[in-house]
Amino acid sequence: MFGSGLLKGLAITWKEMLTPKVTIQYPDEIYSLPDRFHGRFKLDKDACISCGMCVRACPNNVIKMETETVARKKRLLKYVMDIKYCLFCGFCVESCPKNALGYEKDFELAQYKLDKVPLVLVDEEPLPPEEKERLEAEAAQKIAAAKAKKEASGGKDKGGE
Ligand code: SF4
Ligand code: SF4
Image (cartoon, rainbow, N blue to C red; front, side, top):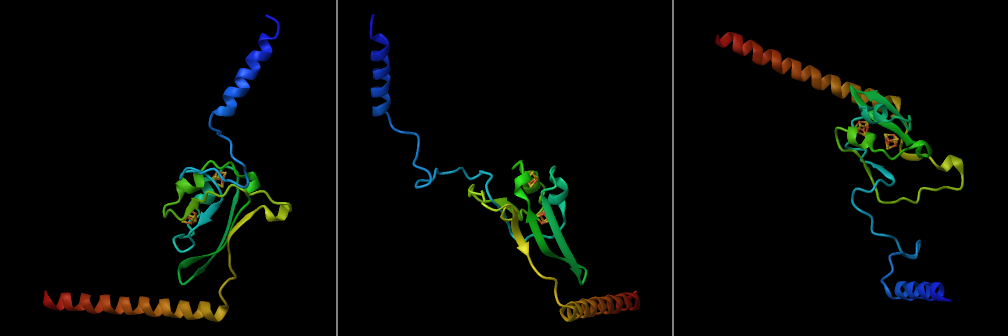
């Protein structure tokens, strides 16, 4: 019949006009993302032990990390993710033994300038030499005290035998 295609098309248009919309007016409205969404990375600096497992797990060498060792403890100085090479595969997050690395739900990671693309999660200066010396001395004192205590208790045990 002449015009049947037009009528079919109009029927579909009317049907779609009356069904609830699934689209939203981004960016005025933001879709509610699931908890496991892989968005911007976040790092809990206090939980991080600077082990480098995340760096080694990354297939694209996205993560650059710098540390310093003070009084036998590693201190995180820089943690930068060049996310233009990131696959959002999650290997780094899964490999973290302390759950220090995770995701936020923010997916708006585009930048106008290329040098703004890397995510700088930690950027700290090394400790000043005098502070390092103080911490080293404190640690040495603690070790010496523990050693002396151990020797004293060892001597007692031997005397008691
Ligand atoms: S999500 Fe994958 S590609 Fe991106 S930094 Fe982690 S391990 Fe590397
Ligand atoms: S794997 Fe976790 S604890 Fe180790 S350096 Fe990476 S973020 Fe820190």
